[in-house]
Image (cartoon, rainbow, N blue to C red; front, side, top):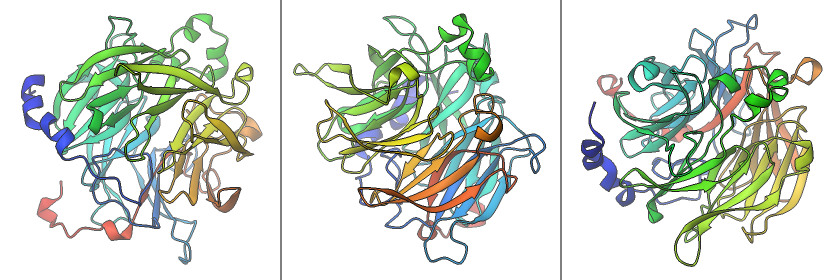
Length: 433
């Protein structure tokens, strides 16, 4: 494995130089290094779904839904790829050239690479990486974030004690491990990890924190009644020097800060996150002296009721933030015109339980999925499993289509990414992995 120094010489200098200019297209929550952006309306919605025992083949799978209005199969499942096992499918991410979609399992720690370039309507599994724990000591690959010619994988746990101390693994786009970076445990760091987000212009990488395998694989009802387990959640964010890949500051952000979103407006240099256990929006920005600071700036619902914010999606102009809360099934929209004072402008119950949220770059379409974690999802009639699409006119979410993942025997719908026919590339078979 290359050393961090060699790794730095190979690509760190390119991080700032080849950052993709943000274009008026695509979805908003992607790495800034992803090229081949979707122009206008997306054609496909890719959904990474958890397998459910006794439902279909019971395996995790990548599901493709036709998302082009006017299509004969609009809102219908047009393809699915099973990985042949059940490993707690969770998140996925596109490579910088958008040829491949990487997805992971939080339980078995396998990483799956899907080719979405040869035929965007029919992704195919081309590689399985099964040695993450053996090679790195990390467990639970969560965030997959594109770098130039690389993929950084943020893990949630470790193979030693299945606790929250973990790190990042960097792979090349062939799926070969390049190097690793441990999450800091000194200077106030708790060693926990969750999401990754980069601002190339400021040479900053931010990471957030959640919990280890022992927690996220535990039954939710049992977890909340276990005082010791409830202490095992992250309470920090880390500011990293992107070029050096070294932590420069630990921010105290109590309550498990999850997804991180940088403002996408040109010239803005601030980010937001939401804390799952304390139900707050936090603003991360530099103070007058240039030092990075974190500040809680708004409540999400009634924090005393723990609505459990689970995913956020920032608008392309940086002026709005969608927030999904799992426990009350609500989707909220916050006005970020003044990011230091977010104001809730809209809310709607979009399911009995809701989790991930993705919006189109033009802000006119919003996609919502239902599953959080297999052992955390609600039981009985509240255990809805769906993907719902909505149109947004700036005032109201109106239903566009719905796919019932239980009825279709697909499992539990979690992470989503957008695809397009226009991104089909004429690669030779020899150039495919």
